Image (tube, rainbow, N blue to C red; front, top):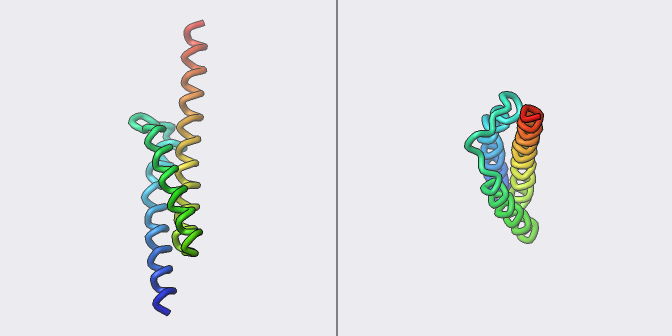
Length: 98
């Protein structure tokens, strides 16, 4: 019973962590704003989360595995949204110089 409560606590923490990324997703995908975002930082955070995911698998923690998969997915959504916007802006700038 105590183990299940600990895992539920971990899952709750993971869900709250996902909710924290919603404003960033809205800025990137809805408002198409990416100023101030560092893709290098996102990459480093993704590596850290991937390592936590491996740790969660090794210690057999559903909460660690689920939370890190969800967070890596959300970071991927933001990361690829920023890349999409920057590519679009780059194409637009090249077309304006022609």
